[in-house]
Length: 349
Image (cartoon, rainbow, N blue to C red; front, side):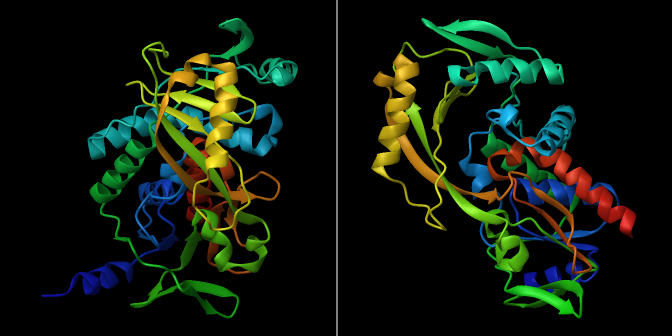
């Protein structure tokens, strides 16, 4: 009887695409490729979805889209149109509800009010003046959130249902090269070969190319989970503050985030960040003062030099593709990023 590794090698031997990285970007890419008839194998250095896909807040929009490049908003807008279908498909295949909520967001940073109004008018999305307590605010009713740990579980279940081979706890040592063509990857167990290799390794993507390492680097984000007192909001929502945001889930779970720190691959948490986030949030939302911190963690986002993700063929190496550099908006761009890359690989043949 063949071992699990022998069976995995045999299934990988007929792969059309090897995907390096098992976060939300890598998993949605695998499913999009599989839907186009391409056989995939996904390799993850740790556990599927356990890095920035899990660590973030699950807001399906840039925190302030008027400060982002048009390319980012284009991918977010296309993903917004895809998320309802993705939710239904994932629930059918995995049985997991990703808790996609149309909860809206409330902007409390008055320095951005004029830009926010101009941007909403330009793109044709609704916003309106409102109040949060005694403070002026802008309501953005179109903003959605997803419960990212449940999204990870759903993507994993959908991949299992699709029969996509997955190698977890398997670091990729290097790309296989034949001249200017990438022909697969080297792992401890040997070489895995495929005509196409996609790097979707998030903050670790730069390990595979000097050109990408100059454009994508890890950026630490610290988050808190709070247990509010009885006067906290009873409905799901998002509050956008200067240098912070608060998310309330459908069941009342409350998150406070997040920092943006150039700390290399250090995922430790700091009391300074905790106090700064709490102080900022409490100055806008008084109910935060009575909240108790029940968890504090950090994740590493794939920060990109110009704020835009890298999606498409490598300019120098044939057979090598990229889907990385999504920084703080990976979940919001994931469906459209996956569709775009999968279609590009399909049409290449």
